[in-house]
Image (tube, rainbow, N blue to C red; front, side):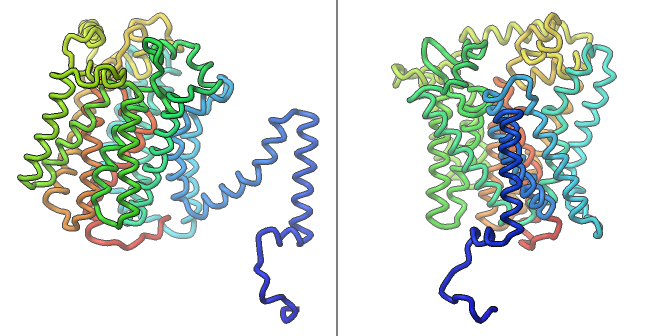
Length: 489
């Protein structure tokens, strides 16, 4: 009876095992796991062990569909790195497609008896995302396309994720609390990425990473016997650029108010982000803070701040371009080479662009999505485009989708950035919110500039963070006008 219950004893989760039904379920799963291990090995047993957690996640996803968006952002940081720890035949990249699709399914089931309010999605950023995706779909009929599999593989990173992520962000990140959650998730995984990069450089990569470095990856990640940190991301280029991007965001957000703990956290993210940028040895990443803070000083509309900021940026440029301070440090030395117009790597890139210019002169719609650069070699090892390194994100778009695609892509990027800047400067009233939006816009501009030297904009996690930022920026007035949570999530 209830009167016999011990009022001084707290109930715990383990108390549920006292119930026969929970004990029976536990014993059944244990027996099945043991049997699976005996017959099929440890892998089969592991599947049964994690199955309850998968079911629990599925339940929570359908109860709170925003869980899918958070999962996608987290996967963006770790998914490509996980590929080093699984057999090559496992196509783990489709996990991102699956979680985004499942999030939409969860949304529809969550609101099965109610009409989903799509009004938050009806914004020009959504229209632009669908136009870009539509152009990519039409590329299927490009007469230059030689492999439909290459097109299918390439379209996901180029436009599919953009088209899927932006509506979800507009629906789910609809108040300041969720905006802060987004920034904290970003900050936490940026911290973890930097810490992993530090471990790689100081203690060395693990056995799986060593095996990866033993392939062609070692040619670009071990320079003169020194390792370029790549953390748990796809490569050092993406790691360095994303950490610089995160550092810009976190530096500005740290001064957006919210208490000392918040400031310390984001300053820590910023500091380790800059450390990660240097440890990656990614020369083009230095342009992200330079361009990002340049835009930030303009967005502030404060003459003393502008002058001080521009002076600091000039000092940084002078340090790298006109001095030899810190030249003994391999990471500073490599960053400094980004300011050398005669750098051999730059000359090779310019030569490749001249080759592409001749090839694309008669191909205004490009050579086909998924057909250019190193990644295309698995589909078309002997084609012209797959044997020319594109390096730059914009050169990749130009090579695969032609001058028409490049102009459309640049128009979309600059339209969003210019409109967001106008909103930040003249429409947002709350100082803290203005700083957060300025952080997203400044980081985005930095990535846009850096994408001329590296294909970072379309690679995870930077791509998902950029697409999320686009939606948040063009929904900035909503955050300023109201802080009420909608019911869709």
